[in-house]
Length: 252
Image 1 (cartoon, rainbow, N blue to C red):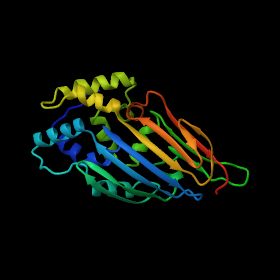
Image 2: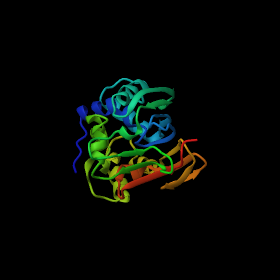
Image 3: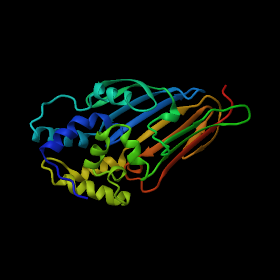
Image 4: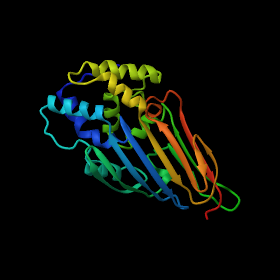
């Protein structure tokens, strides 16, 4: 795969970065509440890490861009509100390159889904039948999921070499080596530190279900809560398919 970083790419990169900062080179925490009918809400906190901030500012300066925050909550809100399964987004900038706020889900079963390529599947509990929420992401459905966020998603992740978008079949170690090599060639950027930052980043997710949780795949649970800690490289590389599942009893 060859990535050419020119002035047009840089300006496009800077324009779409806020949309995907919760996934790339960031620390994130998501707390969700799911209602019996499949609606719900997410509380999101995320921020860019120091080396990603340095990279973005370096690219912005090289393209003659203006200063100010790169992680713009207003841009992120507009994009999320247009995505399947999302009713509204009310995120705000809470600090330098940080966001937090809430996103309202209209139907969790529709979230970023397209046709038969199901990213999220949801079944409400009914009588003795438990409720079930499953999430599946692999190299075959990841590009389709990205398309639900618009063409910028694939562009952004491809520019940052993520196999989830490029389709490259490589390991997490090979991916991090690529990041280090490519971004070490950009003046003022520490590619090694950036790769280490990505390797250390992850997303913490807590979901409160309508009833008492019976089982969880890929995480832990207690009472009505299911918890997951997902390394960022697992999402970006998809060396193995990501499969998460929660089952719970009749709504309390």
